[in-house]
Image (cartoon, rainbow, N blue to C red; front, side):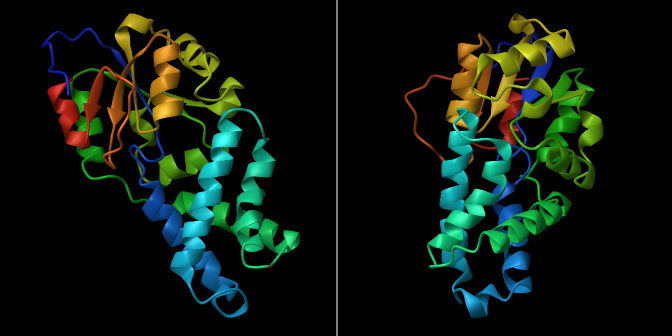
Length: 238
């Protein structure tokens, strides 16, 4: 991690939400567990929830990548990740996939597990006078539910979703939209996120400095401005 310069030239800090501040894996697993048992899938599909969750996570990640790069639409992503998971268990029930997906997205925003030190760091940055914003590819209604239920919505001046910007990370248009909406200049702005492609490569290509929040110890040939492994390390930068 690069050392802090001691000069506060950043004014606008743009955070990603899922996997950066909001613990998507924990919250998603808890949600899917509820839906799985509510529909007795442990009896009709497989008794192995862990295996089911692993296959869902695989398809979710794969389809999110396709969505981020514009190959599929939002509605297709919403239900096909569940449908592809069911197909692995020899069920092509599209009606069930749609129902499971709707219930999953209804429950998910009510989960409130954040990464350790999330509240402390955003309070620290707020006290120091930084303007905090979010740039997220997540669905507008779902992301706002996560923010409100986790009680962190009031910390962020602007919440830039892909729906609002009509562009997705890693495309430069969403970062340009975020700068326009906040009145921020590139030189005083920095993107903070966990996704090497969407957050880091995307922001770098848009001309922004970056903080790679490497919660899982991922290796990369990219050279972010900073790399951290715990949110508290942001205190050494800002």
